[in-house]
Amino acid sequence: MKAVRGTPKHLSQNGELTGFTYLMLNLDYSCNYNCLKCFNQGESTPSYQKIELLSLKERIELIKQAKTLGGKAVVIAGEGEPSIHRDIKALVGGINSQGMIPIIYTNGALVTKELAEFYKKNNATIIISLDSLNPEKYDLMTGTKGQLQIVLRNIEQIREVYKNTAKKVKGLTILSLALNTTVSEINYKELEKIKDFCGEDIYFICNPLAKLGSAQETWKVLMKDKTPEDFAELISKMSESGGPLMLGKNMMCNYQTNGIAVSPWGHYMICAYTNLTNDLLGTIKDKTLGEAYKYKQKIEAEHTKKYGKANCFIRADSFTKYISTLKELI
Image (cartoon, rainbow, N blue to C red; front, top):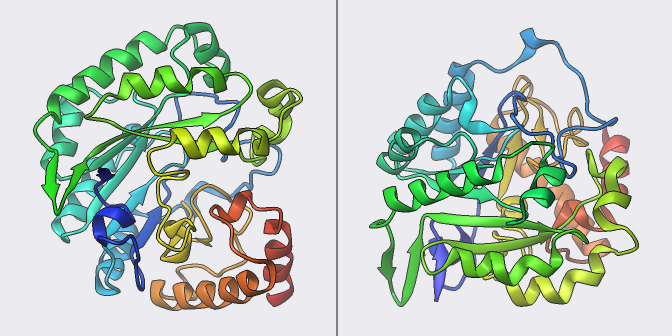
């Protein structure tokens, strides 16, 4: 059996986490892609002054606070493409120096061999987004032209750099490379082929599409007459985690149940993949990381008791009610 370094299956043999585990640290938006599914673009994207962006010093301080709280991993999932951010090396090095696991999400197009070697040296887990092995479909979904072959070449370079990083721990093979596919009507027939491409050295995850960000406007292109529920059984079967990567024993995403995100401007967020909670959970100016995490946990516990569990909070039908509750509390 396989698991990804930094996930509940790796950090706890039974997949059950307790207490604060994950800081999701979003960087200011910069991306070489224009994806139809992007969480961080679209009409609902908030606009703030550039001068309000967090500094490297403030982000390093958040990393230190996460360590003090018992954090095990710091996740850099966006906004945009983390690998081109000016401070990515300083942040990854800072996370590793605190004894935590850097988890980096990337489209893979700009991860050079040199950068992959840096990530490996700093014990980073790399999660690569790949939604198709068909060049035309890839171009359509990413808003690029001719990028697929570059990405596939880079994945092979990353594989070579990471080839000796797998470790055996109590019957589990712990991998530091994963590939994530967001399932739509465009690519659902490719899942088996993409999973085969992953082989034994890359962990395969697939997720349902979320109607957030750009996907609100591109939904018909991505889904046609399908719904995410139409692909639920297929995702459960094909994804090595049974669904989202961070599913824990509680069958909920542990980024949400055991973590908190921070926006590029210092807003606390329920998850790195939605800006809809910006301004609703406080900021680093008025709450410490620990205070914000406790506040978020209290509200979410009440919400889950009322509306039930969801393996992905922001994809759940009740998410709009959660937003309404937050607005009533401010």
